[in-house]
Image (tube, rainbow, N blue to C red; front, side, top):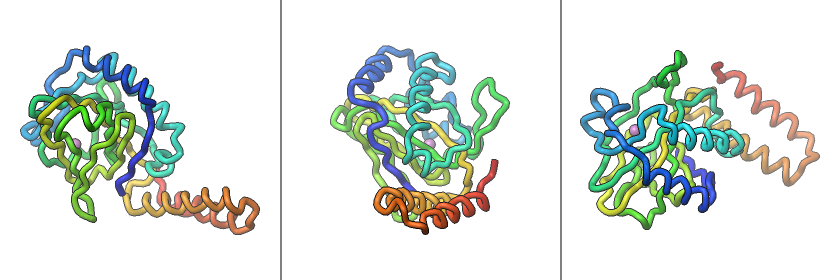
Length: 226
Ligand code: NI
């Protein structure tokens, strides 16, 4: 399942973040790539633990933890702290699948990368190319979102970032280990949760809501891993 989560940051916030990113000291993106993906990766990245990456990452996670769409779709257990990247002057990242397990620097905890996310900090009209292409069961999806918006997609999918041929594309990306490992199970729970939320608004006193909500939790209990 591919999900667009709009408006995590307002335009003024995005503007401030972009200004800070324009001033930052960028490093070669190969620093966090696996052996194989290093060959495909041509971009810039803020080193893990960079103060600006930490600050923006913390703000993102705070927003996400209050975002009902993210919580319902990702059912997050733990996340790998967000990293920041920059594609410019022909920078690209060819097709690859992200490493299955990540260990944040200085942490003993490892994160299984069930879900990948990209949050855009540059407006689509400020650069050419730079689409995130995701191979999905329904074909290839090309994602290029307004600044402040995020896309969430299964960590199992093959994906790439097309070359940026004009301007600069700033974005943040991170991985989530979900309470529910399987994408198909997560998708079912997400649909059911959305339907329950809608019924709660439209017919709040219907007795079946209690049974439906109970069934949601009983399915979650069956599939959850903590
Ligand atoms: Ni990737």
